[in-house]
Image (cartoon, rainbow over all chains, first blue to last red; front, side, top):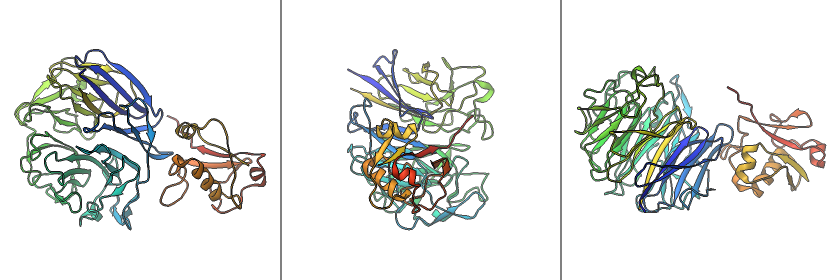
Length: 371
Length: 98
């Protein structure tokens, strides 16, 4: 039977929401790992029963949990994320050198074709890979060893590697993004990396066109067109048509181009979604009206989607990993808020419903389409 | 046998009910006690002391016999009452309100 499984990470545990293909009635299980921060939960495309979860705590550190039965049961796997070699330093907020220190895993990205291979984006920014289902982790240190690494500086939320996009066509090509260093690409499976930030303009750094230092909030890609990337930057929604070699702004008529989440329609590569947030000082929707904005033209021309979303007194945020799409027809779109709601649209964004509305603050939302 | 009490999150994480009773090889110190604890419950590695530095995680404290042992050297002997099992070694999470 066709259905969807929505994987929700929150400040106080993980939740698994399931529905059939109609996406009208939902079963909610959880909290899993109650009381722990769950930064991200993501299932394998190669084996949907294999799910990885990043569980962390300021008290007890990082855990990686793994499920082999679609989220019904979990077991902890290895939690040792040791930087390769001498970690060295990056810039601290005051500009002084600061040793690289592992804090948590922000994002888990299972391989396209192997359930036992999974990538982890961590804070302080680095990329790790496990090839044994999470039982051991090794850093792809060519990224952190890129010549610019010593100059990376954390954003207010920490120096996190939060986006990992695996090219479904070329297994050696990976895109990542770091706040506040920018976007990077490898074409050799992670041995060497290059910054891909040409065309970005950030007024809050000394050189607005610098090679690194941009606060990229999120990247998105449609799997049929891995050379086309979309970016929600701190300010500005950007697009690249050449695998990140160059970017141009597509904010167009958005009411504000600040935001965190961005995603692409499952069947229409030119249809993209963002959630405009008022500003970097006021992390909530403009005038208390929660709106998803959709472009059907790959950017520039946007329309607000409000049907079913609160249009008064709504002051939540939607974080960078808290939006996802399913691959049913019509495409389902999902996002979670810091107010604990998870909204779903079964018609590509035309109408919305809160499928849960009183969870802890939502950190991440991922969707598995089950057949 | 040394009695160890963990915070509830770690008991749940390691599927532990109540106190833990541990045999420690050689002299009973914080280091040998944590070595024994992690040997019996590998899932606790990294949760009490950092994997790499082996330092106590900053929001955890070690209490015993109405004393805060958190800043004692890792190789200092534990109090006799702890070694004898008459008093537990408490691993305590910092209180967080708000």
